[in-house]
Image (tube, rainbow, N blue to C red; front, side, top):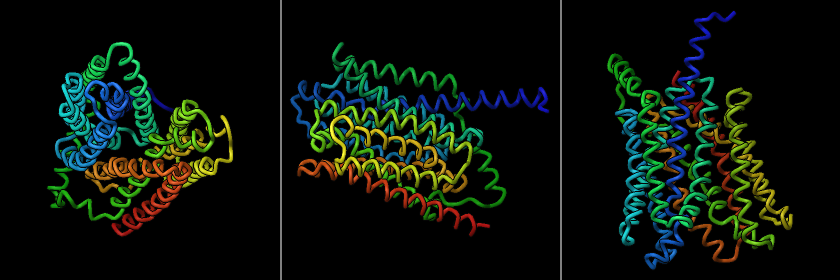
Length: 416
C-alpha cells in the first residue's frame, strides 16, 4: 500500500519532470521556429532588396553551416558550465537575429541575421538532451523525447504559417519584430523556471567523483567510441529523407501524379500531422519497453521507406497519391523517441553535451549537403528519384541504427 509520504514524493517528481519537459519543449519549439524565420519571407525580401532566390537560398545554407559547426562546440560548453546559461544565450541570439533582420538595409544584414540565428540554433540539441537525460525520471524519458520531437514539429508548422500571415497583414519587418518578441517571451519563461533546467550540480558531482578516482579523461575521449561516429552517420543519412520531403515533395508529387501543385503541397502538411501522431505513439513504446530502440527504429523506418517507394512508383493517382507520403510520417515519428534513446545508450558517462553536439551536427550537415543533391534531380526532371532517394536513405539509416546498437552492446560488454 502506498503511504502518503510516497504519494507526495511521486507527485513532486511528476511536477518537476513536467516543468522540465515543458521548458525544454518551449525552447526546442522556438529553435525550430527560427530555423524557418527567413525562408517564408523570401518573396518579400527578394522584392525589397532585388535579390535572387539563389542568394536567398544561400542564407538558409549559411544558417545550417553555422549551426553544424556550432553544435559540436556547444556540446563541450554544455558539459563544462551546464545547460542553463547556454539555453539562455541561444534564445537571446534568436531575439537579436530577428531584430537585425527586421532592420536590414541589404544582404549583409540578412547574412548577419542568418549567422546569428544559426549560432543560436546550434545550442539547442546539446542543451535539450543534456537536460532531459540528466533531469527527467527514467520512467518518463520516452514521454520527454516525444514532447521534444512534437515541439519541433509544431515550431516548423507555426513558423511557416505565422510569418507569411503576419507579413501579409502587417509587413515583413513587423513579422520579424513579432518573432523577436516570441523569443524574448520564451527567454523570460526559461529564466523564471531556471531551476528546472539546471545541470550544474550534476557536473560538480561528476567532477568530484572523477577527481577522487583519478579518472579524469581528455575532453575528446568520447570520440574514440565507434558508436558516436555511427550515430553521426545515422543522423547524416536520416536527414536526407526530411530534406527531400520538405523541399521537393510538392513539385515531385505534382509531376508524378499529374496533380495541382497546391494539392500536392498538402502531402507535406499531412506528413507532419502523422509524424506528430507517430511521435506520441513512439514515446509510449519507449516508456513500455516492449522492444529495443533499434528494433522500433528498424520496423518504423522500413514502413516509411515502403510508403515512399510506393509514391516513387506512382501507382496511385489523384488525391490518393498523397496518402503514401502522409503515412510515411507515422514511421519517422514512431522512430523519433527510440532514436533519441539509442543515442543516449551510446553516450559515454559525463559526455552528454559533447556527444549530442557531435551527433546532431550530422543533422545540419546532412541538410546542407542533401538539398542541392535533390535539387539537381528535380532540375534534371527526375521526380521519382526524390521519393526513391528518401526511401533509400531511410533503409541505410535503419541499418546504421542496428549497427549502433550492436556496437554499443560490444562496448558495454568490453567495459565489464
